[in-house]
Amino acid sequence: MQDATLTAVTRATTLRLIKALHTLIWLFFNGVIFYMLYAALTGRLDWRLWLGFGLVALEGLTLLLFRFVCPLTLLARKYTAARQDNFAIYLPNWLARYTKVIYTGLMAVIALITVYQLLR
Image (cartoon, rainbow, N blue to C red):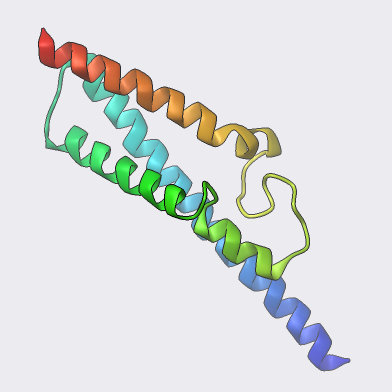
C-alpha cells in the first residue's frame, strides 16, 4: 500500500513539474510573439525579430514532427488519465484548446506586417 501511495505522489509531482515547465515555455513564447508584434508594428526589424521567427519556426517544426501535439503533452499523458485540453499545462481549458489557432493567426499577422515593413 505504501509503494502505491508513493507512486501516486511521484506521478502527481511529476505531472505538476511537466505542467509548470510547459506553462513557462508557453509564457516564454508569449513574450517572443508579442515582442515580434511590437517590432513589426513599429518597424523595428532587428535581430530579435528574426530570432523570434527562428524560434517560432523551431516550435512549428517540433509540433509538425509530433503530429501537432506538444512533446510535453505526450509526456504528461504517462502520468494522468485526464484528457481535457489543459491537463498538461496551467491554462484555462478554453485557452489551452485554442492556443494553436490564436498564435498561428497572430504569427500570420506578424508575418504580413513584417513583409509590409520590408517593402515600404
